[in-house]
Image (cartoon, rainbow, N blue to C red; front, side):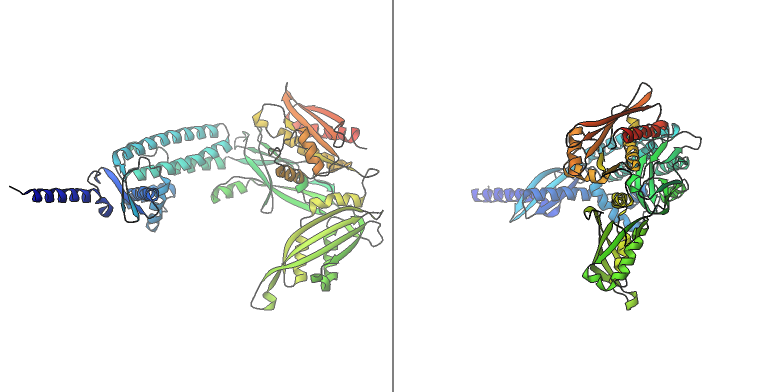
Length: 587
């Protein structure tokens, strides 16, 4: 018979062993309550407290999942998403990506323990539930993929190429998601035929190529325009996008490029047409200018090569119409020794806009050129070393009454073998085209007696409910800007200036503003008048109404209205409104 002291000792050691066993997972990473055959198990630790330890434990569970994924499964997955180009040396990166890309649900923190200042946490994931969730997710993703591909094929059949391409891009993402879920599933169970892909990247690539190869773009109008210095192209560059069998392609982005620089972008309408109006973005210097209209899609290099073959070239010529001013050039101290060279450069730059230097002219154009060194490039010799400068060009017009009539300023960077050569390049780089226009009008002589009023033209409201004609009102207001500028009766506030003010004041980010807001914005822009209007499609025709409002009084000075029977007559409608403005509203 055991003594009471022996019984107490046995009970003590039994309790101690049980207590030790209950926290054994801290050192072993295993727990008999959660066998590895049924659970993914992770142990996390942290000196920052329980929450940090729990987060680390959950991450360890995810790592356990990715460790179970075989190299062959990873190779299979990425052969689907990257054309069999995934190499074995990328498997570590691939496993790491799956830790966060897969939607791992059901991880639970079941135990915590503290030893000294370190907190430990035990997290587990039931493999059966994990497997069930993965398979359910794959089924749902496959349904979404099936619908996308069915809809994409329907879009192709109805020549909705832009919509089809969008759906195919989404389908690519879904295939990658399905692949990720399949890969995660493989860590806990065998992948069956039910988890197979119903479409592959090859299927998408084939349909994508079919879409792109069916696109045709043709030039409709707007090429070979001619106008005088200070004006802008009166007609837009118009292109038609269709399929190989002639069906129009709506809602496809078409952009105008000057070299490699994108100038503007529009979407094709229901008839596959896109009207690209340069407006203030046009180069107004004397001579011939060329632009490229191209389909603006994010595609592979092979598809891009095909689309480039559809590019259309547009051009216009700015005719010589010389006017004269007494150009007086001053320079900063850094350029003083090279003043004559800088003066010649400034005069040559102005001559591009047919603005000639005449010391006897009554209008005086004061030009200030300053340059600040902004680093350099050291070569092996002096001839291969270059100086960078920040060049500022300020131009002020002093009129016949010796009053300041207008001023503009711009800055650009230059680089050259000397400060003077660097500044000379900077002068050519300064963007003054759109700002120089009102100054040119004043020097070359306005067609009206007395100073011209400044007008702010706002985007017209579309009162109709035809979503596919969403940019009709915008196109009409753009056309009217051109008409008002070319009338020579008003100075027009640049659209970029109005947009900047609206952004600063958080007004109508869509571009369409109410009359009260328009009056406030125009006043801040220094305008005297606003042109606002509406456009509506109904009863088989397009109807447009416009009015010009005096900013000081808030009273409408004149009102115009016109109509057309199709989008192809929108230009004629704008011409009619422009003629009414010139006849009714100009001084």
